[in-house]
Image (cartoon, rainbow, N blue to C red; front, side):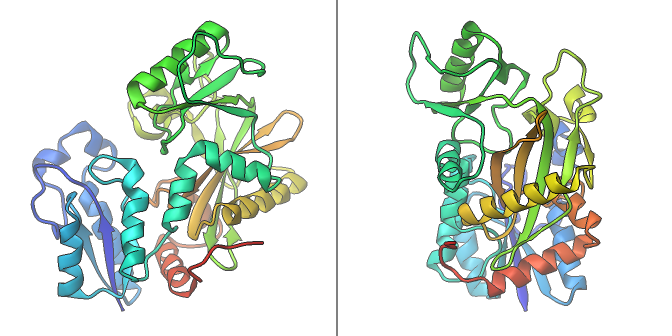
Amino acid sequence: MKIAVVFNESFPQITDHYAKSSPKELKEMPFFIKRGGDIIAEYEYIAKLLRKAGFKAYILNLLDDIEILFKDLQKNKPDVIFNLVELFNEKSGLEKSFAGILELINIPYTGSDPIALGLCQNKNLTKRLLGATGINTPKFKLISKLSKIYRTGFNYPIIVKPAMEDASIGIENESIVINHHQLKERIEHVFAKYKQPALIEQYIEGRELNVSVIGSENPKVLPISEIDFSQMPDTSHKIVSFQAKWDSHHESYKKTIPICPANLPKEIELKAKEMAILSFKAANCRDYARVDMRLDKKNNLFVLEVNPNPDLSEDAGFARSAKAAGISYQQIFQLIIESALTKKRQLIIN
């Protein structure tokens, strides 16, 4: 079976869509150094693991040119697309559009379909769906136009997020606001910088849990991972900000420490896993996803986000939970491909 590991890393320095490593000048850029020095080699490593598992695997970089995909399909005729495309033309909203193309050409591919990808990027719709399904989520409100006064009915602190982003884009220490002046200022910041509505949400003080799910028709929950905030300075809010996820030089990156498996009372663990499966199915996720939750001081669980197609890097949360379950890094990709080949392409309704 032939697998095309498809991704989209478009830089002027990259000209070969089959290149197995990044050009030297990119490896010297801070962003790439932070991610291991060679982003292209990370994808080739995945293909190498698949080849070790008996697949004929190769990598394909779209370079923001969809014609590259169509030409490769004619040339190499892959049986399955391992879909690692997260954005196109620097627009994360086009992630779902690429999955839509794969649906149209009717080729098996890994990960969630356009419905799930589009839904989960729209925080307002996701939270409305979760609430309608009976899943507990923090109180929220969508702010779609600027105003002199924002009447929330919430208690402070409040967290303010861009309504249509993922990967913690737009979530910073300043996103937590404690008075009306800060709230107005942060909403205006979201409008100005991200050109989209703001989602305001009741901030839940407590423990942050990442609950990973693998499979489609019979999804399984992996061991729960917790983000330990105990080393965070008093000047920083206990959240997983953009800097905590992606900026290795930032203090938050170094002091948001994952613990897997999380030390939880059995009844809380079971409840979190149940909520993760319900959220996974409600959002119509497939193959693999991560559900982020908060556990407050009264042991109430709140779903914050549903993340289809989460980061599969070896040091990321999904792989960490898989390892705790006794699933090797290579086996993750095998299991995802098996799921992609057996899943029913229809809405999961329970």
